[in-house]
Image 1: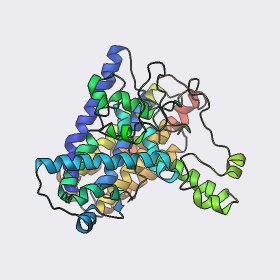
Image 2 (image 1 turned 60 degrees about the vertical axis):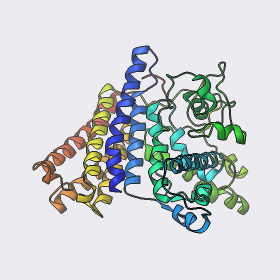
Image 3 (image 1 turned 135 degrees about the vertical axis):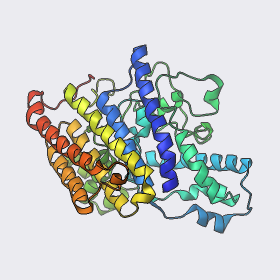
Image 4 (image 1 turned 30 degrees about the horizontal axis):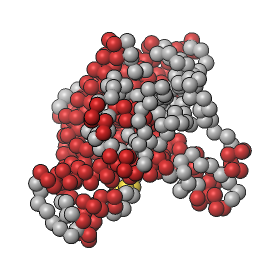
Length: 425
């Protein structure tokens, strides 16, 4: 946990700078692929994911160590070749895990967040799941286990493999010649994120495109079919925590409502998007019919709200750096309370971004929770040791945050048009 936190302290600023650079580059070139609220939503989703991972809020049914212990035919030393084998094994496993997430109803829930952005840029790469608490597919690493690749090597290579998937989430890089035949490129991944019928459920590979070509899921980006991004049942919210559980909630409702007992069971394992006939007829779900005329989700928001959203996101980022930089000092169970506060913060300000008046209720809960921590402990997660007036600064911030949120709900929102799906910035 502490080592991963230290890694993220280095990686997170790099990713953030890359996102801001792409935003500037697109603006400079007259092809800005970012919308303010979508960008903040994506970055906030990334925060929820890394906080969850650092806190270790997931388990594996079958551990890789168990696979090595029971199935290894060889036992090889940690060499450069071992690292290469581990990387390829992780990529093979990633392909099948990714493909299943797209093709099975239950597993789509943990992946829908990644595709929920209706833009395609480096920020949307950070939309990662918090809804998966049990890792079921470790057995796809069986080839590495049979070869006896040490668990320590897999643990070292896994973050590298994950971070290497960041760069190709961009519209600013065209086709890359002969590299298109070997690795996943931005062109390949634009296809993967598109909801055009020609592109749906294609290009599941993560680093080496060879898996799609071997297993029949490859699709080249076509010059006459510009990709349209998002999911066919649009999320219609900037709240990444809501998005993480939307599909699961629909499955639960459908399983409860259907009168067919077989459908109550098989709905979880049917192809993504399948619904029982009786439920689909009685409870229709909004789905994009014409991808080329559909307008992206964007509630009309004032400039003040956009600026405030950036301020709230920045405050959360500062707290995340404080948390990750002091994991050992803060310790358990305090870290769980810190994580809960950060999640509540993101929930509250993204509800405000949705221009939802209930955001004030969430903000009141957040402020009460944060103030309660300070009153009960006399500190803000050991911040006073770094900055003597730290807890006072947090209290002032919470007070201002509550007042500003109330102003948006009772004043600013009253001056804005009704919640609408627009297409502007």
